Length: 555
Image 1 (cartoon, rainbow, N blue to C red):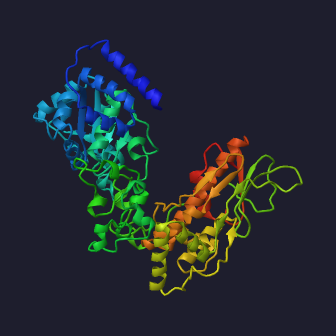
Image 2 (cartoon, one colour):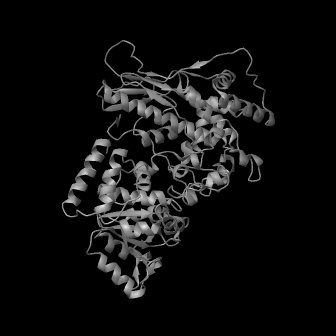
Image 3 (cartoon, one colour):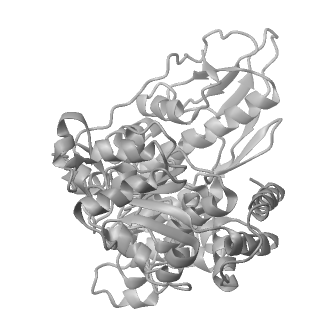
């Protein structure tokens, strides 16, 4: 929702409440409410409306179910301050059922739960669930009900459902290989819409913020493809991190006793998974905003991502193949068609040429004998010494990055690249030339197809992205050169060629898919064709399968 829609929604909600309740029943901490509103995207003009809603509205009934978990999410919830959790429970929320903190036990506790089902309530579920013949792995309570049955029964009556923590969102630690209890996340078996709030644990701000969003606006927040609220999981954690500048300058902590740990050096080389994580931990922090793991000196372990126990490998190591737990090579999905350069394509088809020895092109196939117009521009410096000179002269971070890279080359006994030498500029119009350029950064002389073979052998699904940008609609221009600092950053952070090449390949396909989508919409074309030796590579095809919109037909 935009600003106007949010304010309209709040106004409608307040009018509905005022038709029944006229006397405020409690005061509202405006400082806390302003912070919550800012966090969840309610504009400052809506704070007074929210305060009025909370002061009049009876406490919202809340049922909190415990499944297969460690109660860490409840512990995070209970660390709420300003106001304290006791004020939240007494004034804004009626916590009718929570096995950890409620006074009732046994049959009395279950009676309390069943009595709440006749009311309007929000359901919070903490923990994963085992299903079908494995459901007995989670059996609890005086009536010995299993987790699957209890979750389905309570969910049928709930107004809104929140899966709090990675266990309830994606299965969590008990779903780690070999997953002996066959634990799964809640949204895999419930028919109702579920909002995931992953983390091990999530911050109290993300839990309370999600609940307050529904209480105030009477609708669930906008979510991403993993059913996580955009307001809290819509940004890359690495981009919010206070140590990011040191990543950009190539300054990395080498070990946990490195004195530079106190100087804000980046933790990527000792296993930080921040570049692969979507979360707002640097912003919300934990324990009354005291700190968060990276500030405290330990890298992010990716705990809010699916399968993080398995898919990120060794916790305190970079994502290199020797650190992978899952050793099987990823299965890849080819495109239905890829053409040779001289193949005839149906007219009014958008064609992408990805050939190792010619400029990258996107053009519209026609019956005309004239040479087609290239709708794509992608110029970048492909001469490594000249590129280093450009990066060094851009700003202090770039100069420091090149300085650190020069030291790395010396330590690896690689050829000295004297960046002060006379420039031998090589401007490339072929996006696949990024791949041999990256190989040169590692001191290797390889073709684009050779680098692709290394990328295909990478064992991790996580992408070390290059931040390429795209401009234009009638024609598209891809800004590549600025992003070429990032392979150097990942290299200095200990990521091997396979991982950097996999990230570059994925980034190339993602930006080209965006260009194809933009041009197809502009020129009202619904089908595309791919040509060239680079396009025939299975990894390239798999990535286009991932990034191309479904409405574009590949012919």
